[in-house]
Image (cartoon, rainbow, N blue to C red):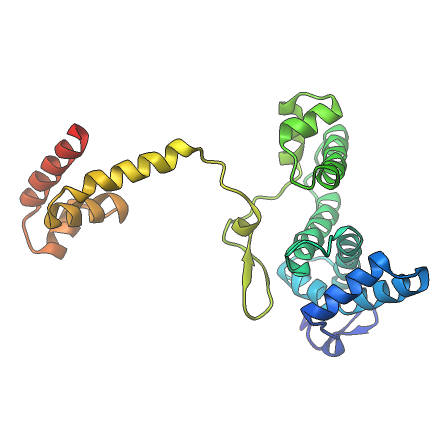
Length: 259
């Protein structure tokens, strides 16, 4: 199936219009602030001007046996939700917000039609949690914590976590979500770093300690513990014996532990 040439849902994909970022911004502002007639016209234009965005997302699922027409229609639903909820005053591209929304809608569709079934009650809990999450996001202007979602649902945190995990497919942090030809958005770009201050303080302390090692000691520690090489591989790369590598490594580690 070549998505760039065929008709999907009666749409010739080779003739899909692409809007510029300025055009998207203007349309989104008109949707929010224009008259009812202007807003409707702008919304229709915004949807049609982002169908290629939907197309780029559903191509990620082309290896599945799902009908492309069905996936495209589901993706458009995600697009419409993104348009209706996106805040044009935020300094972020619409695609950065829209792509995850479209992917989420497609994944929900695939989960509902998956041969591996999750219990009805657990699925209902998960869907309710997602609805609560969306409401809290709009209310708080930020991503709510699991604790906040659980509190709003009057359910234990573990129950909410279990329900959400049961309906989510595993995905690589380096899986690309969208690329506009310049910047590629990866899964890891959509999540935050939950490490506390102690982590980077420890890292700074470790770097300061390593600075006191000799150049050869730094080289060996770097190859052994940051690149994961064996003592034999390090010995071959540096040009000394494995016994020497072992001796230098032990001395360096002893110095690090002492400091």
